[in-house]
Length: 407
Ligand code: PMP
Image (cartoon, rainbow, N blue to C red):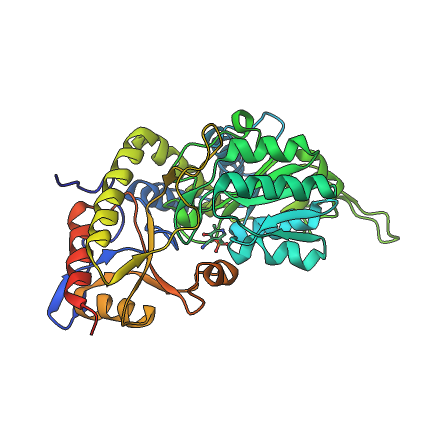
């Protein structure tokens, strides 16, 4: 069977130069940054054509712009099943959102050693991070996390929902329940999840969720932190400046707003927020059912193809399901990381680009501890895909890898 792209993305027909002439670009780097959906690009362009200042302007266009910005928060809240009183802060990206959270969390934070650096370094810098080593199965990992939470109280468990290296999707409900059993909250790094699987903060018991616009088919520059208001309202403003302050007093009596404004000093990225909201609308329009079918079909094709290549080794964090009745990792988003015998990851990536016009990523994917854990401290190749990917793209990647051989 063949599978076409599920939704049109910007630049889908772009050609690139290769040793064999111009070929259509096969983009296998969606996990880093997904191309904008054409629908999102039109909303963005339309918003760009008529916008003005936000929040303090009295003119008509200022009012329209302010309304669009505030509406974007509501759209995002609905998309991720947020509670009515959750605060939705627009940030620059996931990294920025986690740095903001690290600034607001009043206590220790437990993390796993498989995290993207964005969900590791901000916590490490607070001096209150406790790192738990991942175990061969998810059930054993959950036990290790619970043991650490039981050993010493923590304010927060901060954990990825889907690995940016292997695509493995972690059972979020089980993690949230475990954190709560020990009096901790949970922050979920949804950077690799929210464009691929439905999330419900209220339904899953997730206290905080972060993600980036550029990984959900919106442009660069806008991300989201959504979650419980109390810690955010109690924290010092993330940035000091206009918009965050309620009353400014030169003798030191400055007071600050509560809510998202507290952490959004300065003129916000209105168009970025509008684009993020448009992307969530577009994803909902396609629907997670279809997204799931498309992605699983392509992933099965890619996995089976890779398994047939003797010189290719696929990377996984977790072994297949452990004991009956225990939570396990059974799902993956559209990411496959692998190594090729006889070639460095860099050589493979350059070969795919220069000879075949295929764009993958190589390296350590901002997850050095995980790559060491997987036994590939020097890096691997990562092919990741999404709504604009077809089975033809996957077949091209597999054929190119088959041709590469080991010498
Ligand atoms: N967390 C995960 C799981 C990611 O994959 C990424 C991006 N590779 C980030 C965080 C950081 O996202 P950003 O670069 O948009 O801040």
